[in-house]
Image (cartoon, rainbow, N blue to C red; front, side, top):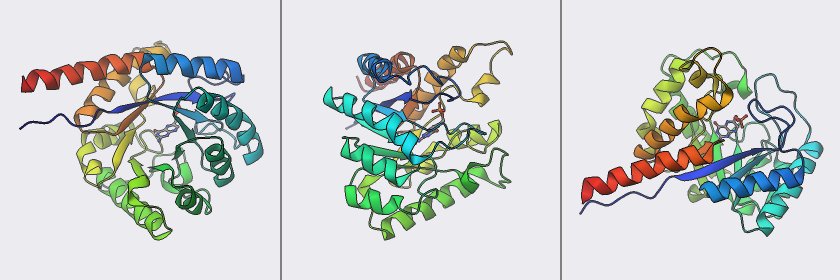
Length: 271
Ligand code: PMM
């Protein structure tokens, strides 16, 4: 019998920062942040990813205290409304405060490399943990990969093994190849084209390609940031076809429509 795989989750992006590359400054105010999260949930997000520090290349680190002050009130309000929350942080102290406020997933773009306390916090709290690949702490220049897919997969495997040794349970772990983080456009496409190799690690795969620069290269030079939402939605559908656990996006509505197409496509194939 043909079965349809578990649906891919939509993680809606909520950056409560003044300087994120596509939505910096828009949701610094708690009420504005909550209102935007509610819209994303209505449009089909199953979890909202709250970030209080920009990971944009060249962005200055904000410090745990500021990050916590930006993130925690928003997490609290969203949880009070029954909205599942993820927190995009590399800092264990922020992660602890976010989980206390009700976050159920820690999304760490450094995969636990930024803060040596992070594995312990993840192990003790038992929350889901998205381990993103970001070599060399995220230097902007593209590192020298001979074979990006093999090397990213190998480095993620090492991170996973380290986390499990530190007491994190395998079922807590989600992997993310880190699209756009120190990778060229060609390397990003290679990672996307080989998603099955990441799925074979045995954990859910999360993809964050939304509005990233390599998509801008497909568009006219004067295209607006929002013009990257259509290519993002196509990536979401193709990631779903590769069995992705989730896609992290700005434009939830466009990705919802793309995933609906994929759902109907699959139903068409078995009916
Ligand atoms: N990209 C950004 C931030 N957080 N988290 C995960 N897991 N994967 C990503 O690709 C990712 C991330 C940068 O994008 P933003 O500035 O639009 O949030």
